[in-house]
Length: 448
Image (tube, rainbow, N blue to C red; front, side, top):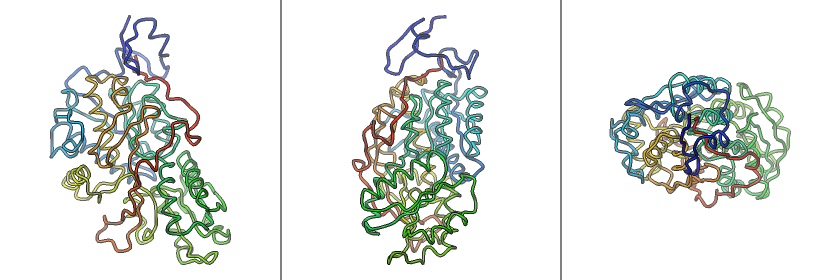
């Protein structure tokens, strides 16, 4: 049967040409391939929210799910509309997406790549999800992004910070709004040098998977460029809960800075162990010993308690920002749930709106039409200032926040202070930057 499909660049190809251009993956078979993958035929459209409901990143997953549910309400015209009213694009009118009511299904990634792929596959095959989004682990994001490329659906990445997600593992069907490890290094290193000096010796503990590797690489490169020396880098298992055996060697290493390339529960535990070993009171090389957490959030700060005070790091967004988009989102989220949203919640809410907006502007749920609408898209009003979804790698570029644990918080939610809003120009890089080398974006797969 001859079918017309919209390719990534909007060119219609017909018949045998389609088969020659797009190989049909073997993972998905049967009638689901007709037209494009999971084309919605009824009055509703189904989105798949794939989040860590268990595992070390479960706190982020719970907040992501809250944000997704809020986004669905706003898209369907319920609640106060949130960021639909501040978004620079005005095509979303609260009547669903392309007039279809938005419904959703959920899955538990367990912060495990295999489990995440399995739940995403089930949502696509059994539930008819036309878009998958979520995750709080770059290992999960890379795995699910690959599956969505094979299946022919759009993947709107949740919280994923590894350079590889839009570097060597980038895919045409995948898009990332969250910032990355390179951007953290570019934003954080100048602040570290200004606060702690350029004559520093750093010891890194690093989560042993794609995010940790690229976060370590990025911070090492950025700090060494400003004069720091890297004393040692040690990998730690993602499943580790007690980091005492990894902290002890730091004491006699000659280092005067400990960099914790850990996230979620891992960071809470490793920072707690570091404080128990007296690192925050230690003097080394005639200097006050310092601890740095390159990436952290309010949820992690809450888990770390008193230990987070004075600790520098970076974050994608924070609820205390005063732009109109942030204020609208914080108001909506706070009204519904009784507390402010995390950066994970913000990212997932925004990704849902961006998908809906792209479909609305494209006039189609065809994933390749949506990809076309997102590539090179510039927008504002979603909490990060003017933002670009770069066509070459599907990475968003926007301002990055350097934050510090507050010494005197006024509430359990007022735990971080914004030290610096790093302008977008300082964290941008060329698509062929060595840290993002390898792999190819390839062509959009509509699943037909």
